[in-house]
Image (cartoon, rainbow, N blue to C red):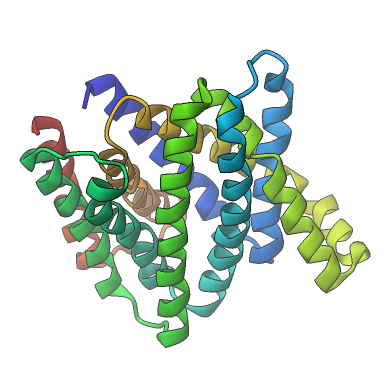
Amino acid sequence: MPIHVILLVLFGALLHATWNAMIKAGTDKSLDASLVSAGGAVCALPFLIFLPLPNSAAWPFIGASAVLQFAYFQLVAGAYRAGDIGLVYPLMRGCAPLLIAATSGFILNETLSVGALVGTMTICAGILTLAFEARKGGGHAIRLALANACVIATYTYVDGVGARISGNAVSYTLWMSLLPPVLLFTWAISKRGAVAVAAHVRYNWWRGLIGGGGSIASYGLALWAMTKAPVATVAALRETSILFALLISVIVLKEKASPWRYLAGAIIALGGLILKLG
């Protein structure tokens, strides 16, 4: 994988950790997740007129991705309510690339080099190590996290293929971002009522705009990278967002990091080196 692709994927991982931390810190995780999705759509709109439409073959993938993104944001909110982030986040983000690495050979007919495969597995092992530091979170949280890992792996495949056949990965990403917030807010209004949802939006719109911009940029960089390198390798490297989340928790939130976090950081860094050398 070229160094410029690695650096851009890592920058996208930083953006991912940032908007994810904003949802975790919010008072209403479900509505904040919806706001982030809506913020991404708002940030995408001004750029659509400057980009070509995706090829017609990509539109079914855009529709399927929207439904999967709706499920993803709902499961993110539910998992954060049910369990400790030290358990939930590593399981969600760590199991997804494992699923992709295990299945990309017969689904996408991609062949990973030995170095890329070892690097991918090492990064995933480092991410999953963080689960050992969790002090709470039971079976329900684990089930939600594993379910979301399956959703993440599925939309990674859908969008990886969709971006490739769209003719323009950026255009695909921006169009794909428009429908999920419609589904999310329709669901929220049906459950809570328009007044409650509007009140939350009024006081937290900035959270959605900042988080949404980071979300759409992060995923756009990942999809672009998938047009330049194997999907499984990009998916694994993107999960280094957990390292940035660790730095945010220690430096910004002043949280104490357990030894498991430092061990995981060392393993992930080793995996990144193997990935580059492979």
